Image (tube, rainbow, N blue to C red; front, side, top):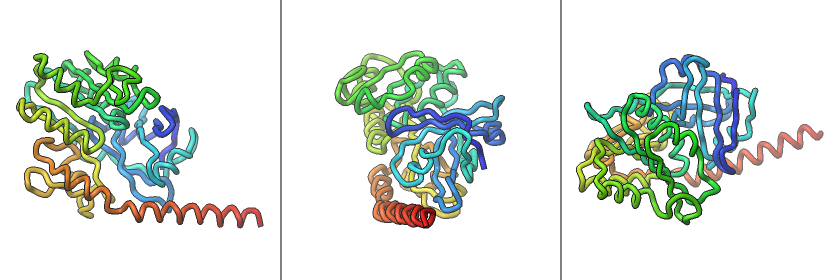
Length: 285
């Protein structure tokens, strides 16, 4: 069990939590993830490590409330405990030798994963440009944190309500065409966004790394649930990734696989609601 020591609501659907996990904080690196279970009845859910503090012994996660587990997690408060919190899992991000300049591209809640990448690279003395994209101004997160972790921050919104109007791919293409020479691009966000970022960089021959978060259960390569096709070969995101070459990922297959259990997820939310209703009824009696 791990104790929640800080909780911050970043926007109506995205929450930051800092938990006491000294053994994980001691070894965590940018790009790695944890798997948690809210309680003894919960499912195992992977979340990328958004930050860590080795001295304090804490790990920070940022999540969007999209399913039952993340909704239950969001209901917890400072002082509460998370049943299971395992990690660090996966391989840390690796860049080509001699990398001097990188563009980190984050989309929506994916910016929570892009942030530790930018922070780590910036601390190593690598020049970092960040493109952070959101649908609108009201869901922008981590702006000040990004400013402290990069050389240039470009904020975009789909509707133009904040920063520059347009998609992250538009800004990335304009920066490349303007003569900015990147040794690598790191893209983290919705699958469709990472697919199109990879399409932008491919004609320029820029190394592009994407962080994949497919269906995952055990995090050790045993269940096979997180398999992805990369370069025509089967890989497991939990042990071979989560980072992969964006120019070799079969994004269409990944998008299809990620929708397989939507029906079951909806049914489980209904079952949970019924359990809570029965429990409340028993308490009244």
